[in-house]
Length: 162
Image (cartoon, rainbow, N blue to C red; front, side, top):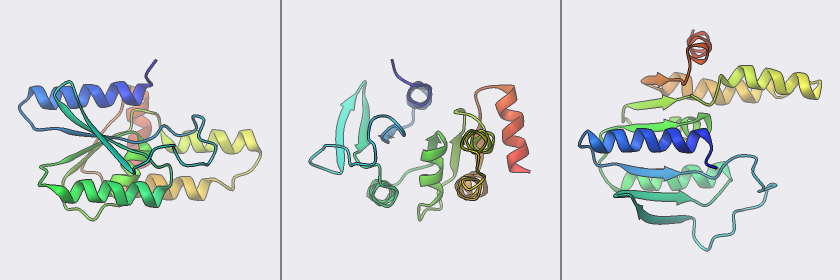
């Protein structure tokens, strides 16, 4: 069963395509799903195919610097009107691109800092808060538009933006 970020990506891509935009979908590996710190087994960094009349490219790396480099390469290939990132990891990567494109970040996978605080409570240490805030701050400072998947998430997002 696809996760929420996959479904939300598909919803954005299909709606933009139906509105007449040319859409390229870039997919990142899911975090925390069986990779255990090792690289995804693929002979190439990028895998491209057509799916439902959409150009789809998978970035086959869980290493941040490699994924960022691959995304920058995709970004530089042609002129885009805007960039839409679904999920915090995608938004953080997009926020670090050398780009002047307007960026819409859909942070519907939940308020990042609330999740970070819950993890710190679970592990009995606040050590991860600084890293979590640096990730969130990067996306929050760079995004031009934001969306969330519920009113509660929207209010949490507004608090983080403040």
